[in-house]
Length: 175
Image 1 (spheres, rainbow, N blue to C red):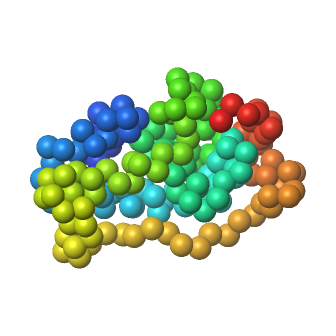
Image 2 (cartoon, rainbow, N blue to C red; image 1 turned 60 degrees about the horizontal axis):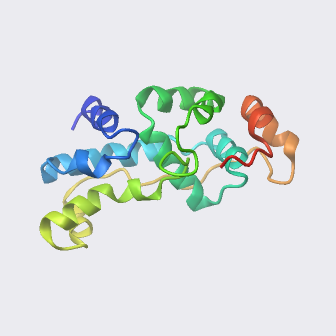
């Protein structure tokens, strides 16, 4: 699967709301191609600046929460994703435009990570099929290890990383 096709599927999924449905018609090879790009972009977005933005907007962000945040970020589409990689503060306005910030648009979407596994499990009747079949495919895996330049207990250090987001969202309990 090409990167272009990956982003087309993301666009068609309505910011992840219909991701499983968008994947249903794909072959197993295409599903693992999609999964390749999914893991690739998860790894690419494992950046301390994005974690700071998630921490500010969500009022805290654990390791798992940061994973779920990045799943949400990918589902926002190519332009939002790449803009955020270049400058995490570009997400400041994206949060303001969310239609359902406490529901389907909440900036943590754990279920998106399981879309390929769910489609394959439903197709084969074996919930563990993905894990056995994945051995036949080369997937990039998730990133581990990140150097954090900000401290949870030091507001100014967080503000230095994402000043626009900090000024607009720090202490705001929308999410």
